[in-house]
Image (spheres, rainbow, N blue to C red):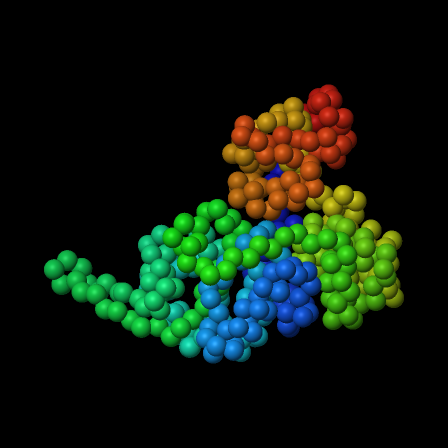
Amino acid sequence: MKIPAESLDPRPRAGEPTQERSLRPSSLDEFVGQERLKENLRIQIRAARKRGEPLEHLLFYGPPGLGKTTLAQLLAREMESELIATSGPALERAGDLVGLLTSLGPGGLLFVDEIHRVPRTVEEYLYAAMEDFQLDILLDRGPAARSVRLTLAPFTLVGATTRVGLLTAPLRGRFGFTGHLDFYAPPQLGEILRRSARLLRLQLTAEAEALIASRSRGTPRIANRLLRRVRDYVEAHDADALTAELAARALALLRIDDRGLHEMDRRLLEAIAGKFGGGPVGLATLAAVLGEEEDTLEDLLEPFLLREGYIERTRRGRTLTRLGFEAVGLAAGGPQESLL
């Protein structure tokens, strides 16, 4: 049976509650974590405002749910500039890009999520736009073809990607600053949870806060999502406060164990252990066995499992570590028959 990925996918989905947006910080000072990145951004903001110029083009990369979109919104707020947001797959034709860039006012920010998925034909128009704030548009075809040059208001392109290696060198080289967002430590997630609990008017005990933070995969968006699901459990049971006991019950219903592993994580680990003797196994084979897309495994599951040391990525494929075997109840190199 194919297990839905919604419970661990930190990317927003259609119909996401408006509270997802209301829990976002309203300034860089409220943004928790990523201290070195924030300091670099503060310096660039102060310098750009002093010169009266837009920010240089910025590229944020890292796993989903860590705050790339939020940072783009905060940059626009700090610069008191207009923000237009889109995504790489949405820019199907050059005309889509032209429409967005020509609608931006001076100093505006164009945020492109999943920028590694911008079609190559559209990407080529970005080069001149980023360097010279100009667009050369080809009108008609054949003998009647002619080129029209459009001058754009100075703007800032803010790109976000989970796979910086998939960006072409010409595009990557045109960004003036590249910032990496890493997973959050439990104390930082606890700080985020406390703020979110206040906004949700939820009484949260320190023990419950620590429990949810430890099972949030180092990702603020997942932490907030789990907090809302646990809040539903508290309200459904007419409890006065969110205690560790209530949080543990709610997370057990969501099938999130004390290691922070979700059902999809366990299925992946069990497949490597039970069907492939602990590996190595290729990503395509593993995706076919699990009935999932390769991108789902590579973007949503592997970053956390690699970081926590449950799997290793080798040239021959994915292999389980000692921790990975322990997570599925086996000793490393032990018998695999029980999982077949």
